[in-house]
Length: 191
Image (cartoon, helix red, strand yellow):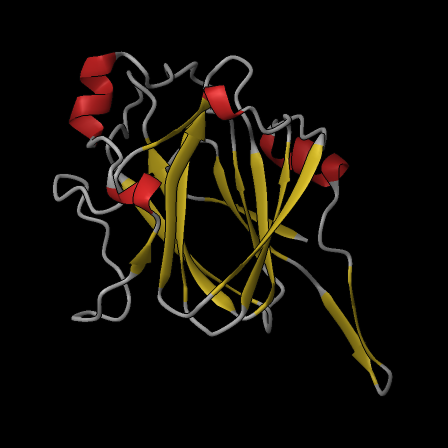
């Protein structure tokens, strides 16, 4: 397992080792001890989620109230996604910036997002399955969204010229500036 910090503090790309032979393959795709040693993130899995998306589906930008927040470990067992980490932490030196990582079933790679970061993805293939290990239970009243299509954020999406499939919740979500003005964004704790 190779763990590489991204340009946004608290976000890491994970390259997993695939062991293959004539029977198929084996991947140790999550190790909390390796993550803690390499990142300082104490990742105690409380819930596991799975989504299946059509090609061109855009999900996010989602985040949870801090505290307690919800760190995420995201992997794609089938298909592929363009994954986005968005720094929405007030006071962070990279506030309002984002980074994209392609996660694929073929590569068996993953991404780790610490508490307080926004998360979104676009499904690049039909029937793309995404798994999320998270550090807190889903609490509808504590879950929020920022518009992934906020022009001030300027996320660059695949399939230019094609309309993406977006939920009503995400279409109607606040812009980053409106979320900031409302006081709903997490504060950067520094690490």
